[in-house]
Length: 349
Image 1 (cartoon, helix red, strand yellow):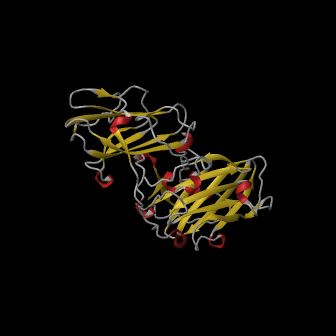
Image 2: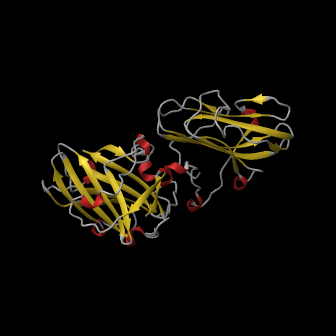
């Protein structure tokens, strides 16, 4: 909710259909709603894709509660086809202002968003017109208080515990560890496996690549895995705000057959140095395999224990182009630098 927008504009009403982007974006609306009558109101929301509608009991955003939502999508103009689109009756007072907030997440394809209500006299306004709204000017707040977008629970992915791992590019130890899903690409499997032990986080990549390209100076423009971790899962709006997030890069070396891999830091804190990372790789018949390790002390304050959570995003690059992406397109809306837009992993047995 403390996201820094790529663009901002004032709305004509609570209906948007001409979004400036074709997909992979978020829409965030904040305003005051002024009730024209005293009595019970029923709110409605419709969107493609998911959305959430919050309303406060006063002008104070701290009093907001989620009153309606769409999980997945709903057709334009259809207000009550899905559970959650219609709120329970909410009592409002005439001429009183109420803080209202809407978050809309779009993955791809068509997109729309609208909020409506039924007033106490049974008049329907769908969407709510501009004369019922007043401009909201947010106060200055600490980035650490930035709230989390209410992503569905299904977006939390488990990272399982692993036994002993020898970093040599041989992935025999990884057979029982499932590959990470790719929610952003609607795929249940990927070329990337992540696991944990008390000493830190381990990873494995089995990449198909008929021409392995190594760039040891700038590995992210060659073949590599870019990994972003939000260590305290604070999901702040931007990497430049106070946070515990970092970008790690693991890649094959210029040695054409294997050996020690390349490690690099895109950004992070003082402890996030390439010398604190380990990586090994092997050339395979159809590409390469790679293993890496990030020590627990580098990942603090995250704790290596069951139930701990970290923000996560990754991209497997071929010649600098992302072929697999975990939760968010790294090149859209600067998602690579916005922990609030990443997914979450939970450590599990």
